[in-house]
Structure formats: C-alpha cells, structure tokens
Length: 400
Ligand SMILES: [Zn+2]
Figure (spheres, rainbow, N blue to C red):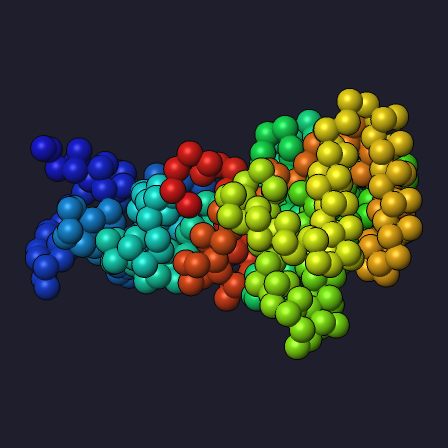
C-alpha cells in the first residue's frame, strides 16, 4: 500500500511524513501539512514564525494504536496582517483524535458497549461516551418527523425502582419514540405538546393509561382531543382490585378453613379462565363457591374482558353501563369504587371503538428500555439514557 493511501485510510489528508517509529506497541507518525497556508484566509503568501507539536490519535491498525505527532506551524500572513497557527483539518482544535476515528467510534457504538469500544480504540470511556452522545443527538426526532404524527401512545417507565419515572411518547404509526420527558406529571408532557402545537400538529387520538396528569396535559393543550384508555392498563387496574378483594376476604376469614382455600389463589383469579389447567379450574371453582365477593369480582373480570370485543361503540357503551350497574349493585365496596372510576373514564374507554389504538407499542419499547437499564449506564447519566431511548427506533433491528 502506498503511504498516501495509508494516510487517507487513517484519516490524515494533505500531510507528509517526517519520520515514524514504534514505542510500547504503538505506531507513531511524525507529520506535517504538505502546504503552507494561512489558517484564516488560506493564502499561500505566508512566512513561518515558529511551530508547536500536537499528538492526535488516529484509527488503530488492527490492535495497534496509531498516533500522529503533528508539527503545527505558525505563519505570518500579509493579507490578514496577523500571525496564527495553520489549520489541520483532520481533527477539531481541542480534540485529541481525528474525525475519522470519531466516525469509526460512532459506528462501533451502534453495536458495542462503551467499554468495549474504549478498549478497542484505546480512547477513554468518557470520550467514547461523549462521541456516542453526539451520534445519538443526530437521531433525536426533528420537526419533519413530528409533522406526520397521527396517533400517539404515552406511557411511563420507572428509572429507579419505585422512584424516578420517565414519560415516553411513541408515534404509533412508525413505532418511533418521539419524546422522553422526566417524571410523570403534567409538566412531563407539556414541552412536547407545546412543540407540536408550535408546528401546527394536532394528533387524532392518544392512547394512555388512566393516569390523571397525562389526561390533564392533553386537556390543557388539546381540548377535546380523544384519549383512548389502554385496554391492557384498564384490565391490569381491575386485576389489582380483584386481588385486593381476595386479600380482604382472606383477612376477614382468618383462622377458618375458608381462609386456606383463598390463600395462594392470586394467579387462578387473574389468569384467563381458558388458560388454566383442569386441576387449576377445579381449585378455582372451589374458591368461587365458598366466597361471594370473590365470585362476583371474578365474574365481572371475565365480563369486562368482553367489552373490547363488542361490535360497535353503541353496543360497547350499553355493555359498559350494564357492567358498571352490576358492580355498583354487588355490595362490594371496592367494586363500586372501581365502577365509579370506569364511569368517570367511560369516554376514553369507548373511544377505542373509533380509534382502536393501544400503548402496546410503548410497552414493547419499555421492554427494550429495561435492557438498556440493565447495562449499568442507565440512570447515572439521565441525558444519555434519554438519548438511548430516542435511538430505540433506529436500532429496532439491531442490538441496543
Ligand atoms: Zn490570512
């Protein structure tokens, strides 16, 4: 390979070599720019006024680190009437690595962990991380990505168990994360809605769970915009009520044989009946026979699941009202409370029949966020973590 080709491959353009040597397993190339030009106006009409040395890391050759020791001259330019150092275009003035190495690190970061890239390139991991951040920032959704938004899904992600949350918004048509906000309050969404409004975008519908601040944020910025309370979240919410009733009943019957029947039946009640084995079904029926509140709550659960299978909004509305009436009349306090909640959220639940969207796509994103989180860098650097989440879209078919 010719020397100039090698130099090009390493990211050194327009230099020539003064000498080279090896030291401690590394290759050093002492180089100088082939041309004498003013650093500002690029004229050739310059006079040399001293120099300094700068060491820059180049692309490694295999496992061998390569450094350029660059002689940077100082020129007096008669056009500018000033003395300044010449430009070396292969690296930023304050960086100790070339643009080519930076691009290479960016490519690697899409597939490898920071630690691996740092080890492979010989750069400090903090440097690798900064380069990766720069890469990820290029992929944060721009205005043109937001203009096409029709349906959104909003959900929360816990960053630290039970403490910090992030609010993640996904464009349901593309599956792309379009916003990551801190916390799960009204303010967690407002910057995003403000931005959307500024560019004149009004989504057709937004899927979310029955979390008040999210609904409030939508009301604040998009009055009348249809919310769609997510099926899975509504059912999960009901499952919690059902389990609470079970625990209450077990406590009431403490020390009786009935308590023993109730104990350890959580999964029997929460699982879909069709998914239980015959033996499990027998146990379930024994439980349902001995306790009326649990029985009612269970029947209502199986009923509630049918709501989303109704053929039309009208039929669903009738079905939901009937369900709410049954829950109220059950005499079970927790059921009445849940019925009241459904009553309050009925509009958003029934909107599903006009806009059959869900937060499932956000959920899918959530699972991959958990993978990012497991890689230690999760919450220590929130900005980086958020950038990683934005990037989930781009890495759909590759590693995280
Ligand atoms: Zn000049």
